[in-house]
Image 1: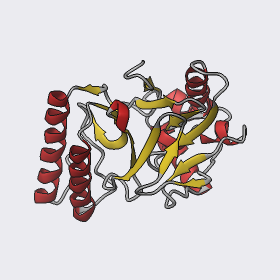
Image 2: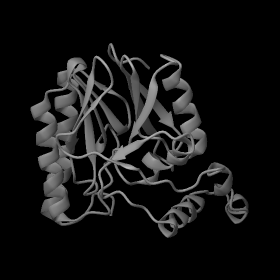
Image 3: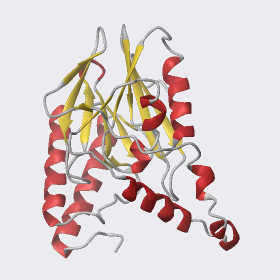
Image 4: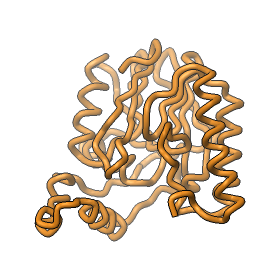
Length: 249
């Protein structure tokens, strides 16, 4: 889906129920920047196909917005092609955690026969752990030729979340710092993380985007819709801070 002159969104990529994860890419004069690689190798193939179809001569780069596997699961597809992956330097997942993630995914399969057959392995076909190999922190700029991607640290969902702002197009790719319509995933954090998350939302407000590509849910287009969605996120976080628990617990 083309969302601005240079920016695209890929929505509805397969992930754990009920989540479908979003990705996207930005096309410059000589480089194309892919934001997040999906849950698995097959999602990465899809993302790569869409992103390279716009300008096939462009160099391909990738950035991960966070460490959760629905955003980095397709990394190996890109690394085996020598494509650099940028991310917060704190993102370093282990094989043990990746194996746990696959086991958790298998437990979401409701049919007991399919679960016993470990059909999650089909979902993770050819998917191996691949961590980012390049750092991206607050203030970094990735030049794509004629357009730049600016990096902002937006922690809260995890300590290592980053957002990518394409200023000329007023488009923000923010991973799970914002999810539209869904309840955000607060289970891994605590009150301080949620306070940090509120500050990250303040950062987003200060950037004044006209389009947000969230980690999950529909694309948020228009300042009015963005205001409504960010206020919804604030309300959920403030309630979690007050009650000292995530809304889904």
